[in-house]
Image (tube, rainbow, N blue to C red):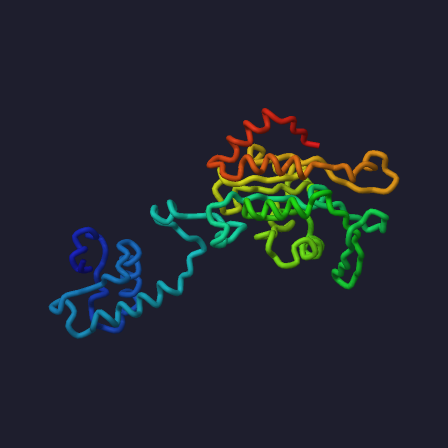
Length: 288
Ligand SMILES: [Mg+2]
C-alpha cells in the first residue's frame, strides 16, 4: 500500500517530508518514523513518480530503516501462532531410535540403587576416586542386591534415565562403573536438573520432554517425586552401615526384584499413572 494513500487516515499530520529541500530533512525523518511505527511501513514505503520525482524514495527508506534498526526492543511479542507452538526447555533430547515408543523410566541413584560412604567398610563392592576443586575423596559403594540384573532388565523394557539430585562428578563416577559401555542407561540427569524447593530437590517429570502418561520414576525420597506422585514407584531406602542394626540384614534386601515386577506390568501401558494406580492398590507399597 502506498504511503500517499494513507493520507486520508492521518489528516492532521504534516507531510512535509515529501519536500525536497535539505533544511526540512530532519523534519521529514521524524514524520516518517511516526508513520512507519503507526503503519509498520518499513517494507512498504512507496510513492508515485509525480509526487516525488527528484529524490528517490529508496533513499528515505534506507535512512528510516537504519533509525528503526538501531532501536533494540527489550521484549519479544509472540504472534498467536508462535504462542500456540511455544515449548519450554526440555531436560532430555529426543529418544534414540531403539528407545522410540518405550516408556521412560527415571531411576534415583543414592539409597535406591546403591549405598555409598566416605568411610571404608567391609561391605563395599567398589570404590571411586573423586576430585573437585583440588580436593580428593574416595567413596565406597555398595550395590543394592540384584542391581545388575535390575538394570539389565530395565534397559530392555524402557528408556532408562538415572535422575539423581547428586552432583555430576560424584554420580558420573559411579554410573561409569555400573554402566561402563553406556548400554544400560540412556540419559543421566544430575542436581542441576532438579528444582530446588524448600531446601529439597524436586524432580519435575513434566519438563523431561516426554508425555506424562509415558513416564515412571523409582525413588526412595517421596519429596523428590511429590509433584508427579501418580508416576512414582516408591522404593524402600537402601542404606548400608556397619554396626547399624536397622540395616544389618541389607543382604536380604529384595526391593529391586519387587519393583521389577511392577515395572513389568507398566512396560506396555498407554497410561502409566492409571496402571500404576491399579497396581498400587493391589500391592502393599510403602514409601519408606
Ligand atoms: Mg535417593
